[in-house]
Length: 321
Image (cartoon, rainbow, N blue to C red; front, side):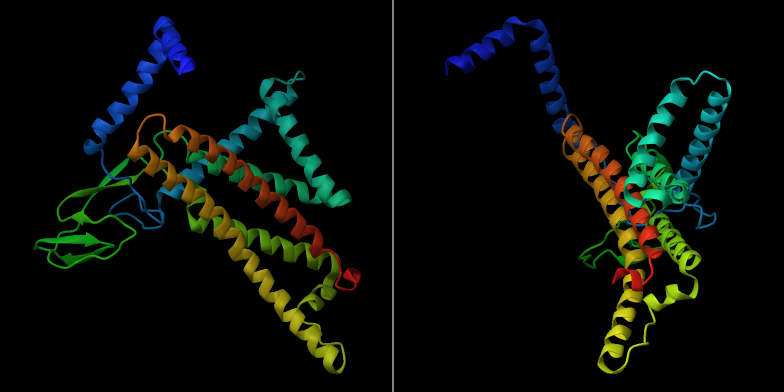
């Protein structure tokens, strides 16, 4: 009790603590008072076309992907220009530190093959981490373009692009229903990692490279990993089944790669949107820090798994035994 009284006494006497505490209270109370005026968080499982009457492939995730690509290319050119000047600048020093750290990680995993795998591994890491963090920039997901709702000539609801009669009950929908004639906000930007098309493309490219490295190192022997019927009798059947399982495993890796990255980043963005809707001030901050950590971990895990798969693909089936 005495400690509690002492705390409040110091709080009243210290203007700085008092002002900070009052500011926090005002922000929390204000967020509760303003909550009825806030619109529900916009959650869309798929990337949305930016132009209402334009091509469906030009989505907000594609626009952000192009921006991320341009930023990475500009960063590489700026770093190269800084290195040519003789005395590296702050940017060159930072990039040198990042590249050396990534190269050290790759070298510890694959040894002498680090020089071969590093360019694609570093590209994967930098693209993913820029993509992950792009969704955390203020305005991404909240600044957008209004699209008018479709009109059916009656009084209904637009649910998942289907007009539902007003007296029908809607049990569940991933997308919010829009009243007829009302416009809906389509975010201008969406993190590329929160689009399954982007993560699936990354996974597909990675696994195609795995097959390339395996074939380039082992030639036709690489396919014995999947189609091994050389044994006799019962053991031949076992080897054949194991090979088929290996083939299924390669396909499953594509799905695992794609959904792991997409699921973590999309779930994080939904979490931040919900927290900001519940209490707009202060409450989202711890979750924001968590998403910064998750964004880095997902990029790191994707890169390291890709490097491991590259390396193991170059090892012959007989070498495992």
